[in-house]
Image (tube, rainbow, N blue to C red; front, side, top):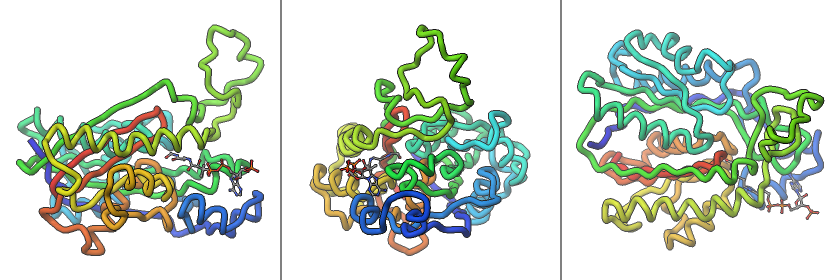
Length: 328
Ligand code: UT7
């Protein structure tokens, strides 16, 4: 069973940070950021909580799908930046959107979160005859836990949300989900501050960075190597499953972390960059929101059309990775 993406919606906060803005608090410059990452500017949530951005994107997706919120059977929110440890963002969005008949839960697969959430949605739709629509919302406020003293990571991230209303269909669909937890320490942030004096028991050492503060830590070089490896790998695994080739794909929509990662993956796959949707120049890396933001932008610009075959591929903390090939 495949899926149909019936509606899409996005929301990004108004406030923006340009590359030049970062020169006020770290030693950097526009040229370094542009050439090493491809990023020019990114949106920053000011007063907007994560759930608010997710709700705005969700309301637009529901309107775009032309459905009643009461027909939604499940809300899945993908986020690494929940406003609360509990309740879930999904429960808040379920209430705020009027999805009164929906179950709700959050899913954290970091930047691969949209891929995981859509694939989970498909499995619910496939096994529950009564479920008509699943609302998938990817909402992220990375600015809340980025370390603005770390010039190698703070310049990468942005905030935003995107949502999709998904229904059953018999269109082409194949997926691949994976995780390599051995690299978990390369990209991590603690959920709660651990007082250093409590951290004496060696048995409890998780092998992650010693930094006890809940700010994002990234080993950029290791994540870069991982990303350029798994982007083509994930596509190759899916294409073998359903016996298609890169030439059958109209648009590749990768996680938007660094344009050099996308260029290297394109080269490895032997696919022209013209077939890749790239939006990171104006959004930065918005974690799990990056793929649906790019998808939505492609659709709104009329570049991505109904009936075309798309390859969505993500990677991120975990280290998670995975992809979906589907007909839009
Ligand atoms: O969704 C999560 C996935 N995350 C990613 O995909 C991130 C993957 N990694 C990357 O994209 C890249 O590794 C970075 C963009 C994070 C870094 O790029 P790089 O080409 O690997 O740079 P580097 O770490 O090798 O640093 C090169 C130099 C260093 O200076 P020295 O030691 O050569 O003197 C850094 O200190 O660039 C310096 N540097 C900067 N200079 C100006 C690092 N950050 C900055 C900066 N401005 N913002």
